[in-house]
Picture 1 (cartoon, one colour):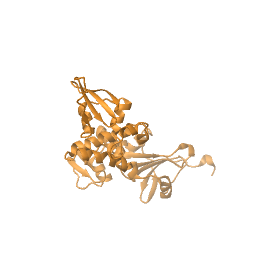
Picture 2: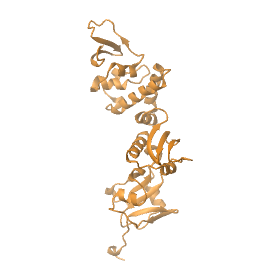
Picture 3: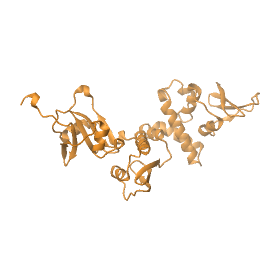
Length: 293
C-alpha cells in the first residue's frame, strides 16, 4: 500500500477495556473544548499533558481527569491508527499527579469550577473518591484536604481545612524549611490565637511568592529574623514600595517591635524593629517613611 493510500484516523482515542479505540463520533468544531463536551466533559474537568510538535510526536496531548491519572481521551497524529498502553506509559513517564495537582493548581481548578459551575457532585465523587455524597450540603475531601459545598448537585464553594491560603500550602509542599521559619515565629508570637498566627503565615508566604529571587534577594539580610529566616513582607515594604498601615504592621510583627517614645514630632508614631525605624502617621496610621539604623 502506498503512503497516499494509508488510512487516516480521527486522531482521537478513548480508553476501552485494557486499551484504546479510535473515536469517530461527533466532535463539533474539532476544538479541544468541543471534543471534551462531545465525550461528556467540561473542559474544567480535564488536565492536558501536551507534547512538543517540534519533535514530531505520535501523541500530541493526553487529557486526564483532574486530580487523577485517569485518561479521558488522547489526541494523536492522523496517521496513527492505534495506540497501546505502552505508548501512553512512555508519554506519561514523568507525570506525577501529586506534583501536578499541588496546592496552587488545586485552588486554580476549584476556583474556575465554582465560577463556571462545571463540577458536579458525581464528577468530584469519582475523582476524589468521595462516599455518600448528595446534591446539597458540605462534604470533606481527604485527598485535597478541602471542604466542598454543593447546591443542586453543583460545586458552589470550597474551603481548605487548615486555614492556609494556596501560597502557604504550596510553600509547605515545596520548601518545608522556609515554611518552618515562617510558621515557627507566627506561633511563637501568637501562641493563643491560631487565626492570627495563620494570617501571619499567609501574608508572609504570599510575600515569598512576590519577592524577586526569594531568599536569594539582594535585600534579604536586612530583614533576617531571630530563627534564621526573613521578614519577607517587610522586605517588600522597604524595598518594593508595598504600602502598610499600623494594624497590618502589627499583624506580621506582633511582639517583635518597640515604640520609640523619644520622637520629637508628636504627629508620628515611631517604631523600631530590627535594622529599621518606621514612622507612622498618628491620625491615619499609615507608614509615611522609614530609615535604617
